[in-house]
Image 1 (tube, helix red, strand yellow):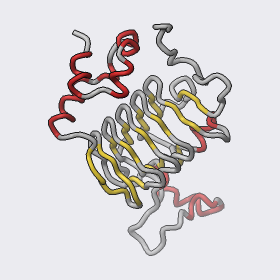
Image 2: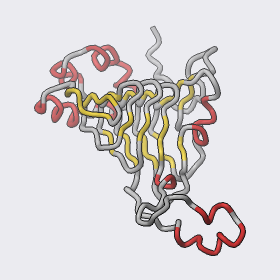
Image 3: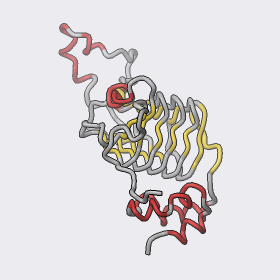
Length: 213
């Protein structure tokens, strides 16, 4: 069996499966940062991720996605540009309709935002999940299909629902601390490749034993 690691720069990592794209070689926006091997799976056009899945992204807030994240079909990231005023009688953004209404564009600029949306490493997003602006999702988290994530998600938490609620933690607090210290996603690719079975199916003790010196 070949010990050559996979290539994080290949757009379509699965031969004959154009529905899967690695996001790091795909994205061009300076407002989106993606780590190695994070992928998006969509039978339609996964290469339209920046425009179809990252919505209302006018900046300056960023979308930051870690390494080894799995994004199922229809995942949406709603960014701060979706905000409307809520402090007056109407929430309608009149100035974008043109005409003399544009003179009041200051009414819809500089609205308060929640900052960057930050996704940790090794996060699995189920089918058609939605992430709201400024959310931070921890390493090793799982987002159930159809969830609407409005609040931060802890490391190795499993959340589901609308709004998404914490269902359980994948590991004890002690083991979560160990996993974060091990940080297998930062291992050299050759070492990661040699211990792939432990990363995918081993215990925390086995993973710790396999960590590079």
